[in-house]
Length: 263
Image (cartoon, rainbow, N blue to C red):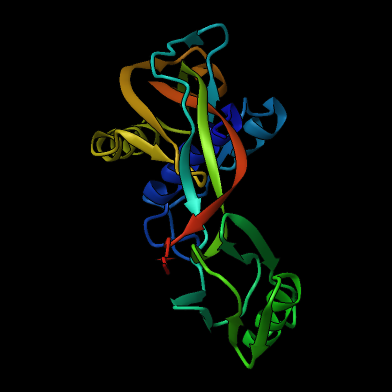
């Protein structure tokens, strides 16, 4: 799920790309060292960096600004579904197991309303999967990857079962985050500020690895010269970030219903 730390990390990563557009092997846009981190900077280290002619950029939330803005139904939605590598083909009284054996997945056979399942194991082949299923189905035999079922067949289906992940949004919140620039000169501060502001103009959403997104809204910009006597020039770029808190669970999904009716 998206967390405060994830939001800060994603913003910091984006800022890093703005400040070092050609990577850290090349100079920054100000031609001096710029350290980008999350959380409030350590005063002693900040003083050392600025005195050395370098800059720091810190990303952190402003305390007591979070609000609950939940407004969406709390329903489960599939966010990830493993791709099946097995296939099944039902013809009259036979089931053909095809594809490639891999885990995790399973074969589910419905014979006259009774379900028979086999979970693929490491080292399984198509032939061993067919043999494993035939061993638990009454009147069934297996030759290679083909299962043949004897006796009366009123209903016969064979399906591939795969794992998936479902997610449900349990709440949604907004919080104000600041991108704080600490620079040794007003010129370096202005260069960093202008580049970051322009870059964020085209970014309104942050994508997280769990497929959720955060919405960013520009809130303001503050120039702070409180530390000028210490040769520290500060700029704060403020954004309101809206992001969800999610709950996740594993789900089993039956893929590709195949039905064969014999009368």
